[in-house]
Amino acid sequence: MTEPEVASSDATNIATRIELDEISDELVVTSRKWWSSGAMAPECKVSIVMGLSVPLDTPGVHVERSTHVLGFADAPYGGHAEILYDAVRVPRENLLGEWNGGFAIGQARLGPGRIHHRMRAIGMAERAYDLLCAGSGARRVRQAPGRAGGVGRG
Image 1 (spheres, rainbow, N blue to C red):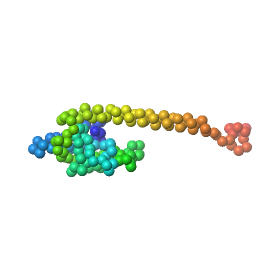
Image 2 (spheres, rainbow, N blue to C red):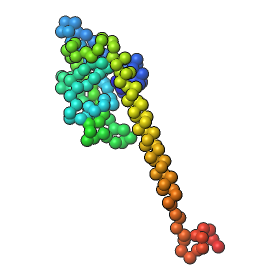
Image 3 (cartoon, rainbow, N blue to C red):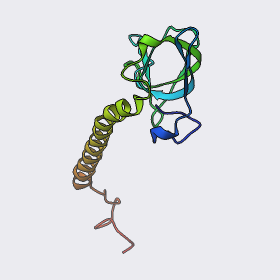
């Protein structure tokens, strides 16, 4: 769902164009997406674009690069990718759900994922805090040679 040119955390802002070519009865997808989950994994064969299923080997689909989180890639597990959809033509029967129903599908999918990411971040913060507390209790300042107490000048 995420696009680099717009504030697409609100799905109503996305700029992706999905148009029906009534002559060929195909859907034509034009977009640039990033943070496409798992797209870097060799096992990934399908991309879901706001309710539209797009085989990744379809002409016009270009997986451009891995997107990193805080300098780290998700490899070797695949990871997130930036994907360009350049007038990709997809059979109409690949539509998941109803035409214009992608927003409801996306929200149902994203809600639990957002909760999962928050819980993981809270867990990492708790672990960091615990390590900080454990380390600060064990820390000892060494005394300077020949000085009682090791602090200041006598």
